[in-house]
Amino acid sequence: MRDDFGCLFGLVAVVIIVLGVVVPPAVNLFTVDYITARVVSTQVEKGETLIVLEHDGRREVFQNTDFLFLGKLNSSDVLAGLQSLPPDQYCRMKVCGVRIRIFSVYRNIIRYEEIG
Image (tube, rainbow, N blue to C red; front, side):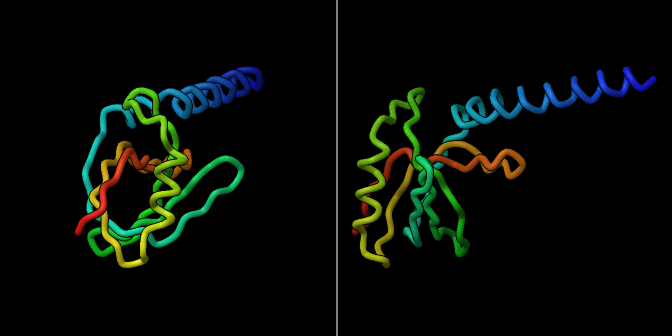
């Protein structure tokens, strides 16, 4: 009985790990959206860039990483451009993905263009 529980626990752990590795990239590839937003803050820590945007009256955290499947290989340029914007500047942004809290997955900013 005890060995069965350990085996079941191990199987569940493997499934969760596999889902955490496979599902987020697949979801990011097929979920693309366009938003109008302004940058509230940026944070670069341990090789990960998180950007807080305000859109539709709420704040949301996004990531800014290279994404080969959509041809985005300029995350450093995107970050530099977003950091240089005035605080009240709104942009039209192409983003992909969904927020998956359990795996700390954020939507990714693909590109932006300033409005006005």
